[in-house]
Length: 124
Image (tube, rainbow, N blue to C red; front, top):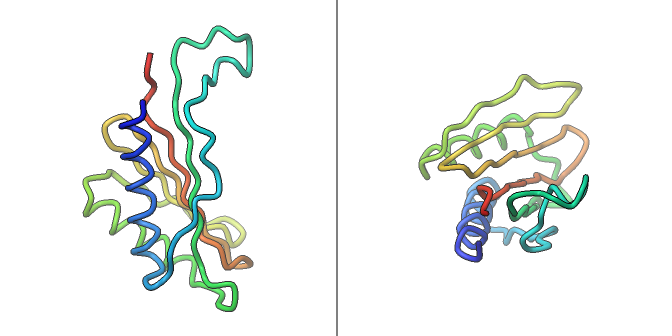
């Protein structure tokens, strides 16, 4: 699990840096390995790591469509399969997968932040 967590952190930080060059992305959520089944009945068979990274310039409203396109290109170049979802009410997003890892990227017309959230593969 520690290796998978580090792989995910590295991927999220690298892609976030590619979307907003010249800025250091910030990890805003990384509680470590969790057992998602514990949230329901405590008998979850596996654990995951879920990490969130944010980037953006507070004084600049990004072009969310361009941010998502850049994120998709960066993820694809790193071996991820990506799918850009249709824009909904100013919310632009994409989903990406690779070897059991999942990533979602969100950008909004009304927010300067671009959010990258990922989960590691389940580990027994």
